[in-house]
Image (cartoon, rainbow, N blue to C red; front, side, top):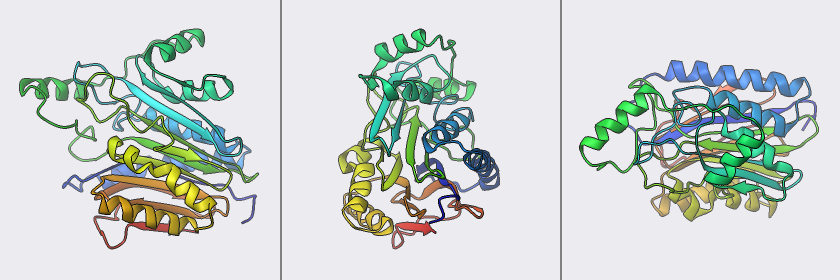
Length: 312
């Protein structure tokens, strides 16, 4: 691959919802973010910096289930998780169940050079104070109304809706980038599945949901428990490192996930510039830049015979 052609792929969630409306709005949003991040890569931004930027932009979009617009847990509080992995350094960092800030990915990035690189709620809150990050309430009126409605039925739903209006499905966000020096990084951020027990830990800030090395990077979305039980992101990256192509690694891992009745999706990028995505869920909201043009997966619905796709 020409090292002067950075590449990236981002996602805004995966789900099995029936409604397929609002694709044009989702496409415009994801394409705009991909274009902005890719332009920054061309200007010399590193893969890690590009992932932080991409996650920040996605966290700031209130219809995604991360940052502003995150779902509420059963007690009516927003608790978010995020992680960042620099594949070149093999460095993983993240925060779990952090509240009252706008961009959890900032904390994950701040922990990259710390001796203690994954912090839970109290530690993450203390770090935010040390960094003088302003207090911010990420809960939106839609999410509060959703929680109040579910409270009437004593939270019988297994999870909150992964979208913030009837016309667009959106969930956990993630970014994988390759810079002009051949470095790979991956980042993932989420508000959780919503209505969960207090303190529930998602896949997002674990190598199951976000992983990268010098060979490839993967960010996952979907049901966190399913992703953890498959150890999905790390599995794909390790299979690529052990000699499979990224396409083969994704396809084999998705087939296993399907046979285990998992509900998930994933995006991936390797050091040759190959961009790959996969899902067992009906919908994967992803967009990418392959060095020449922007593309997306938004109209790739529910074909269990084709569990992955790619672009080179």
